[in-house]
Amino acid sequence: LVRGAWGDGILKLVERIGVQRCFVSETKAVCATDFIAPWKYYDTFATRDTEGYSLGVPIFPWFANIGKAISRNDVLAGKDRVRVKSCWGGMVAFSGSLFQSPQTSESIPSSTPNKGVQLPLKFRSEKEPFWDSSECCLIHADIIASSQSSAGDQDQEGGDSWDTGIYMNPFVRVSYSARTQKWLWLAKRFEALLPIIQDIINRFAHMPRFNPRRAEVPGQIIPSKLWISSVSGKSEEEQVRI
Image (cartoon, rainbow, N blue to C red):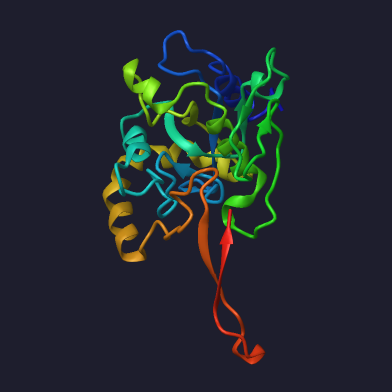
């Protein structure tokens, strides 16, 4: 694998893991970008921008021009550390310290009251059948929650409150077929023409899709509606989901 088409990408992906000397925050996870076609980004399932929005139409620059559009602007600025909230992209390099037992007892908030997620972190899933409940999304949520610095501390230190330590590297590109990999270089030549086109298509396609769970935080009590079949003779009820 290292000597194959993904070899250089693997090395580029891991070279900055754990490095914090020249950056505001430590790099906790870095994702590659994966393509199902030379022009079409694949991982719309797990990728979320810094504000939790899902992707727009999966052509360059992939992220939608919504909210502060921080992730989109990072891509357009040519950065190799695009700030995101969650990603996968075919390959992910994690800081090993997150999966090792700490020297002192540490815990992070969990979506379940009175229950902490202990270090080392583990891949997990949720029982609720939501799009964001898969292990590839939740591991990034746990990484963010495990951060030792609060947003207030970051502001006082002149840091970036949007920098979670999770990044996507647009220069590390992988694919799922030799044919797609062969033509990635050509597709990149024309990417500068696509941002305006992608933005227009996003508006007509109403993307990104609305996600009612986007702004939820760990421990927050969320009222949700439970729809009951009219055949049962019961009325609509509300349940509390934590």
